[in-house]
Length: 151
Image 1 (cartoon, one colour):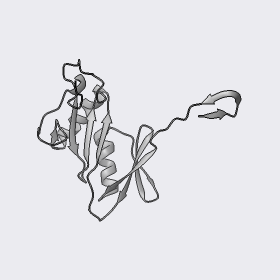
Image 2: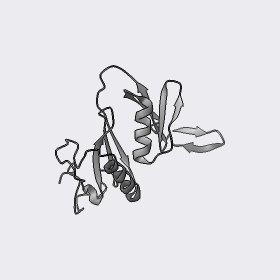
Image 3: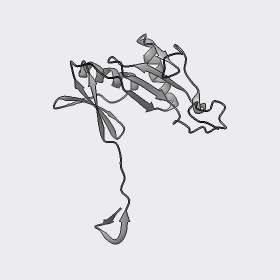
Image 4: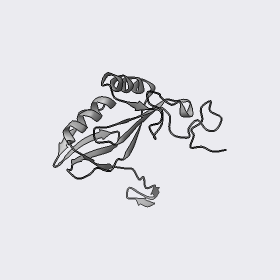
């Protein structure tokens, strides 16, 4: 906590947010277009050697590499309407999707936390996820509790 410079008696709470993360890609421009098109996000911008995709207050800063890319996981919380639109674009592109992160349930969606979710790959092998409910938000009393929750 720190003092508010405008009010000697007031204390401001520090608010930590994730500003950006660097994501490796074979083709940063193509990957940025893929993300913005599938997720319905604003067009990316170029910033020095990055293609920057803005996701809320956080940006995915794509940088090209010719080295092996370690797959990472990115989960995007979306509204029901955004899920429908993204899912339609996934199907239109003929992409494979799964209900689970282990890729054992192809062509299915999950209903964890009484919402909807699915996983799909980006062009670099990063595992992307769209969900309509935050993990655990349905609690143990949900019709479809998140499998990460335990009793």
